[in-house]
Every structure is written in C-alpha cells, then in structure tokens.
Length: 380
Image (cartoon, rainbow, N blue to C red; front, top):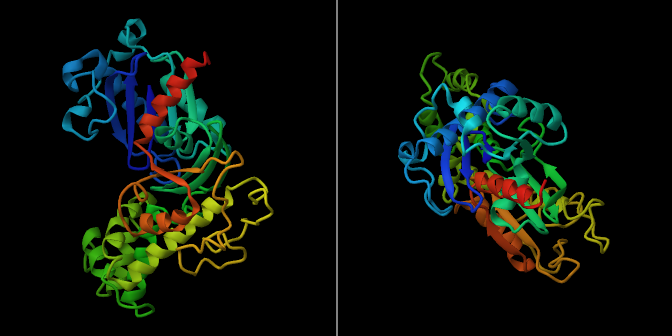
C-alpha cells in the first residue's frame, strides 16, 4: 500500500503483487506543517485512508472494480469506500489483503521530524499491516514519474521544494521549510502574496488589482467594521495556512492581464528555479566551479531574483548534462507545476535551453506504491 499525506487530502492505494489496484481510500488533508491538527491529526488521516482502501479491497462493490490500471481518473465517486467497518482490523489480520508493507509519503517527514512522524504512523497502522515505511513527499513525487535513478525534482503544491536524487535516493534538498521559513513559489505562497496585494490595494499602499475583488468574494468577506481592509483582516485571521493555497488559482487565473498577479507569478517562477539551482550538488557547484549558492533564479551568481526568468544559454549556470553525458531529468510535481499556468511556463522557459528532459509527476500516491513495490522487490 502507498499513502500520500497531502495538505488538502490523504490518498491510499492498495495493489497486489502484480500491481493490480485492489482499493483506494481518501481522507482529509494532513500536511504536518500547514493543515492543522498536528501529528495526531495526520496519523488519524493516514489510518482513515488506509482503512478505506482496505475496506474497498474487502468489499469490491463499494469502490468499483479492483482491476484498474494506474492511468484511470482518480477522482470519480467510486474511488473511495464510503466508510470502513468497525471490525476491519481483525478481518484484515486474518485476510488475504493484509499489506506486507505500507509506504507513507508525507510532507514534514524530513530529517527534522522523521523519527517522531514514523513512530506515530507505525502506531496508527501496525495492527493492519506487516510493516510501515515512512518517506518524505519528495521521494514519492520523484518515483511517480521516474524509474528511480538519477535526476532532480521541483515541486510546488501546498509547499515548494527542490531535490537531487542519485540512484533514487534523495541526496540534497532546498526549501521545503514550511510557509513561515520558506516554501517560496508554492501555492500557499502565491495565495498569501495575493492576499497581501489585496490588502495593500484596499488601504492605498499598493496598486489597484483585480485580485482584491476576486479574493474578497472567494473568502466571503463580510462588511462588518465599515473598513474593507479590516474586514479582510477579520476573515484572514480565521484562515489555516493551507487555506491560503486554495487562493492560488485566482492569482494565476488573472496573471495574464493583471500586472500585480503577473508579478507574483514571475516571482514564484524565479524562486522555484533558484531552489533547483541550489541542489545541483552539495557544494553549490556543478563540478566545474560554477557557484549556484546565490543566484538570480537563472543560475547566475549574485542575483537578486528580480530579473527575467528566461535564461541566456551562455550565462546559465546549470550544466546541460550529467557527468555521464546523459541529459538531466527534472520531474515537475505539485498542483502548481503539474498544470498549465504562468508559473509552470516560467519554469519551463528557464529549462528549455539546457537540454534537460522534463517530465510531469503522476499522483504522489502512485510514487508511494512504487516505493513499496521496490522495497518488496529488494527483499527489504
């Protein structure tokens, strides 16, 4: 079984030895840094998603046919069992669908908190599976679109992070620090910047922007105080950080004609490319002495991040190929980079002259399933 613990939802998929999908489960968002509820809420979400996937496997009629390839749509009403039986754990313990391994991929399961997160998830799942393996969300996103070899990941969803993989193992990461310290260029960051721009418009500190009306309407801001800006403050005070990410589509939707939204999208693109620059290697160089530790978002040393995103092939610092002469593979992942929008366009423009192979990640839960399959294949 693979489980993707995300900021807006938690998804589980159970497959048999040949990869046939037996059941899916869905629970609420449980991103450890942004969705609220803390580790207890995250463990509950993981348990709920796992139980639903197992219930679907035990009762195939509750979630549609079990023999479903991984390229089918995953948002149909039949994807999820509508509730797990209370006596599910005993049935699984004696049943043929008990998972040999469950891989949980979670944002927030990096080195800073890995041990406590892993312990909580093992406690939540130990009675319904043989073994629990906890990975960070980068590994699952990369594996969803990669054979598990060498390459890079650039992810922008609720959070934002870049990673370098060698032999399928994460060697270096940049950002992914949570919205207080980083996650620059993420959906949450884009929504947050949109709110700041709307507030600046309302109190006269910033330029007029279409975002103001869009976000005030989207949030259902009530005219209570007589001051539109203070009304916005009242509403934003009630927002969980992850909810700001839901505002990103409004920003990106008008970036083509609204100057303020356009600048936010441009800044997001530059920030993401800067994070990718930072993971070229551990020393911040590509092996030829080019310093990537401080760039302008195009791989050029010493920049402020306020220049255009499209690179000049003569000045970009990123090497075009790996040491073996093979074009670098970059997996783009997360809601912001998985669909056409100005931020994705900016990132693609920054990569197009570098002869890098760019692929778009599948759903992270697929990567978690593949990691589980890899572990079993290796006898781990």
